[in-house]
Amino acid sequence: QGVIAADIDWSLIRMGAYIGIAIIVLDAILARGTKHMRVPPLAVGLGIYLPTASTLMIVVGAIAGWMFDRAADRTRKPEDTKQLGVLLASGLIVGESTIGVVLSAIVVFSGVGAPLALVGAGFGTTAIIIGGIAFAVTAFVLYRWVLRMGARSGGTTA
Image 1: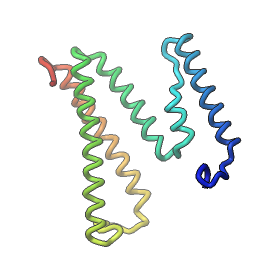
Image 2 (image 1 turned 135 degrees about the vertical axis):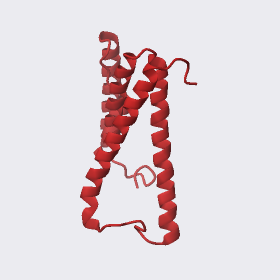
Image 3 (image 1 turned 120 degrees about the vertical axis):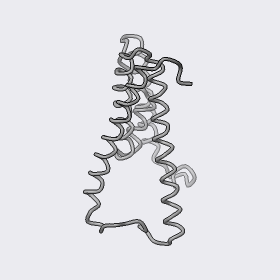
Image 4 (image 1 turned 90 degrees about the horizontal axis):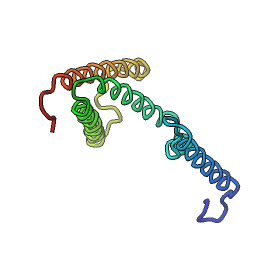
């Protein structure tokens, strides 16, 4: 289908190209006219292309990072504090990826769709809410700890 079968709807491709050009021009105008306001074309493109479930956490992470950077700027050694924050974020990402691989291996080798399930499928929504709250609280506590460590950092973190 599409390009290979030569039955693609080129009007949609043209419309996407026009939208992309408009976003790039708007970003260039904003870059020249304002100090802080931008419309990153890649972010807009991802927002249009990907479903909200995929992009929502990117927005949440960007807001959390912005809030952390503002708090880190008020510490005695802001760059050290930010470096600790990056290390924490990297650890969370690697940890999540590692757990994903381990859980996938357990599913594959057990041959069962949910080998570690302790409760029924009806608990799914509640589990998502509890997990989200637990993650938010854990991230908040860890970032507060990083801010305290950065505030009293006497040397470099490298």
